[in-house]
Image (cartoon, rainbow, N blue to C red):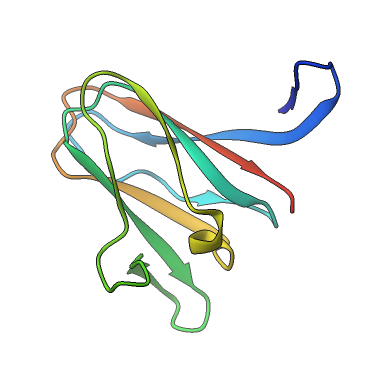
Length: 118
């Protein structure tokens, strides 16, 4: 879906979703197809934080995403629902992600993923 800016001109934003099922902590795979991840629309969550796994083609494995300081890349969530901006450079080389909640979700959660071409 291409969003329109306030001027009515296409803003090149694309929204996809990642779903964490009821009672689970891990979303399904989301592929970006050359787009860069910019922000998340996070509903009310049972867990207090979200972390990310990225797929390594070279290793044929899902790996936890770390920031430049050596910490697991995470965002705060919970209640209320929120939009969280992400550092696009942290995900510049990422083609596929999965999102992990810090707790089993009490119901199905759909997280909006906003990306755009660069």
